[in-house]
Length: 433
Image (cartoon, rainbow, N blue to C red; front, top):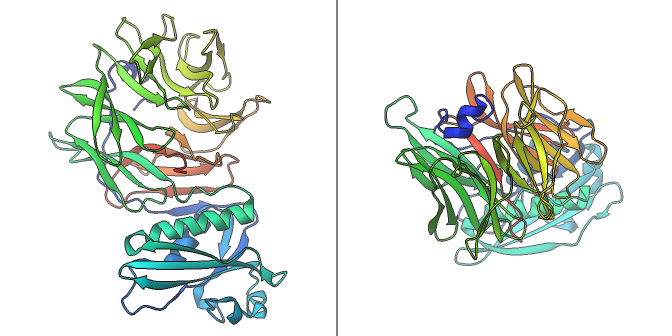
């Protein structure tokens, strides 16, 4: 992988360890110091046919995964109301719940359902929010659950939830054979509903989302040569946009979606370029004898952060798009790689190498303060949630490659190991509306 053998990967992108097609699962390992107790009551249902999804359970799993909430077990509930008139606040005070979420699901026609929900404040004994309904088909009950999770999270934290977002990741089957199969997959942020976007018998690398979430970019090898593709998620239509001799890698969409930053070695050295997607105009952004790679746009689109060994070892630099001035950003640790910016531009997340270990680190760009967020020894490929609170990354646990998540403050951690094999190269989607 990139962080293990820096120069080899930059020049060939061929180091790609094993993974298998996988459903991701959630294992919360730590949360905030004080968790908010909340009861997610099973939703009432008026139908006769069983529902394919337990909406209340999905909401509970979402909120618990955030590391900020403690769910009251269903087995402890003294009652399970589905409407406000049936709520007895004393029952929930006895269980020490601060909030209660109630809801109902009604079959309105065919496979269409109306999901209603309301959040209640136990301390004030009043609704914390208005009663809300959403209409969905049976196949979109999980989407309804994530919508509810986002609404509750926003109401109680003031931060927009990320439960309705999605993730890209790469897997590999038959890793030990002579004929491995690589797959780029997309799934809900909780790992459910994985779908194969593209598969190949050669490596797939560096998946990236467009800012509107409709298109993705990635690197796929064909005949042992790296090529960059852009693909529409809805239709599966894709086009190859770059295939120069040498390295073609690390695509990254600009915030306005009009350009793509990428790495090319067509002129003999790995440099950062931008490609205007409308005119196909290619502009070289860096000019240095060193290896420049891993571009990441600043939130306003007026700068690009990238990794370079121009100072003797890999560090992160910032390029001003207009002036082409380059400024070194990271100084702590032996090396720093793979910059990612929070949406507000305040924090830079990267991989920091200290000794022989690679950790997720966050740097406050205003104060310069750096904090190590993880303590595993081989972390890679950080990607930040669209609300800027969580970092997903690839890591190794007991010899197996998994995905893991840590909050930007380091308090919340959970893992997404696969049920069938290994997984890596995560990319967290933007919001879809």
